[in-house]
Structure formats: C-alpha cells, structure tokens
Length: 271
Image 1 (cartoon, helix red, strand yellow):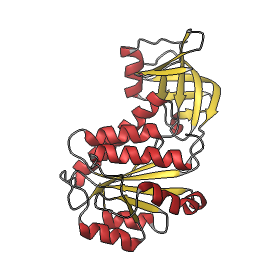
Image 2 (cartoon, rainbow, N blue to C red):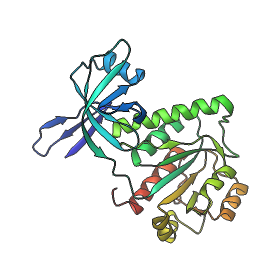
Image 3 (cartoon, rainbow, N blue to C red):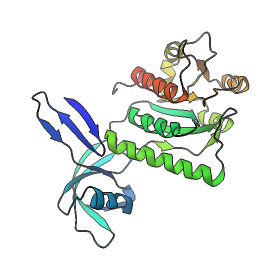
Image 4 (cartoon, helix red, strand yellow):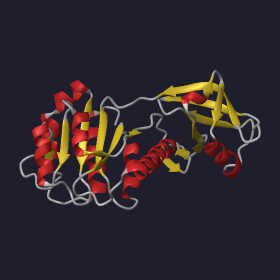
C-alpha cells in the first residue's frame, strides 16, 4: 500500500488501485473521556462544525495523546459544546522501544516549528528547547511559556496528521546545565562540527548496549551558530560523547532531524 497524507485525513491506495479514505482524527484529553462519552474542546469542535461540516452521526477517530485511540460517533451539539459517543477502542500505540530525547538549540524564525513537527513524525519522545551561548532567539518569562505552549500544540497537530497516538512532551526552555541534570547517567551524544575522531555511526555503535539497556538516549543539537568550546567541554565532562555528521555542515533544522532518523533506524525495530 502507498500512503498519502492530506491535512487531517489520510488516504491509502491499495495494490489494486482502489482508494480508501480514513476518518478524520481529533485530539481529546483523557480527562474529557467519561465512560463512552468524550467531550471535544471548543477549538476542535469549531473545526469539526465550521470547517469540515461534520454532523451528528458521522464517525470520527479520537486519540487521547497517551496512546489510546477510539472510534466514535458525533452527537448532537449542545450550544457551544460537542460530544461524541465512543463505539470502539481501536488500538494502543506501538511506541518505539527507545525513548529519543531531542535537545534542540532554539532556532530563529519558523525553523523551530518545523523541527518540532518533523521530530514528532519521526517518533521523538521528548523535545528540550535549549537556550545556549550562541542562541539568537532569547526566550524568557511569559514569552518562553507562550512559545512552549505553541510548540506543544504543533506536536499535537503533527500527531493528527501522521496517525501517532502518543504526543511528545515539549519541555520548558532550559540552559545547558539544566539539561545535563536531566541527562544524568543516561547515554547522550552531541553533534559537533569540529569533532575529528568520532562519527555518528561510531558513537551509536559504542553506546549501543547502554542505550538498549536504559531504553533512552539524548541527542543534543546546537542552534545556528553551533556550540562554544566551553559548552562542548562541559558536555564531555558530563560523559556526553561528541559526534560528527560528516564533512558537510548541516543547518540546525536539518542536523537534528537527520540524526534522529538515523538513531531510530539504528535502535528501533518498529522503524
């Protein structure tokens, strides 16, 4: 089968050339599911009624972000409230065996939005927005909270499109020392353009047993200007291994996604 994605719907073409449309997918918080009834929040309800023009009795797919997926029938709306009746629990998420934590130096413009989206599609478990020495965009206070909320929303929307049922967690903006505290003794690698001795392949091979034993790996990617020598030395003292992606210098929005894909391929049988 060949899969195509279009907005909130998905389309598959079978080997016989016949098309099959899948139902619309919407997020519903597990807190809004009681028994066989699911409450659909106002943002999703507005899209269902005003944009998609779905009506009572139409079938939809709901997912709660923690792995569960449901087939449901839309019910008659009550003023501004919209409910659905669950008729089938369809599946539980088959998550990758390894939790990939992407520590991404905050990129300027809409680059970070794209990184969050693609990291979600690949299967990243946690995304850490990193404020480092060479970060151009400085986020603090309310502006940082608003950005993180927006990135979490982007991750949620990406899950709808790619039929992923577990929404990755977007952490608050952190400094590199805070990141190291979260890493602790877990295996971690940092992409560093000046690394001469260790390729990504070599590092992944050397830490393979540790990754498979702990079930988690941290990938640290710098912003547009990369990491300073001070940050690299801090990482090495922490036990983080530095790795090169080869002779070409990749953009930050390319490097993290490329390395994440390689890591998922290397360690996860579901990929």
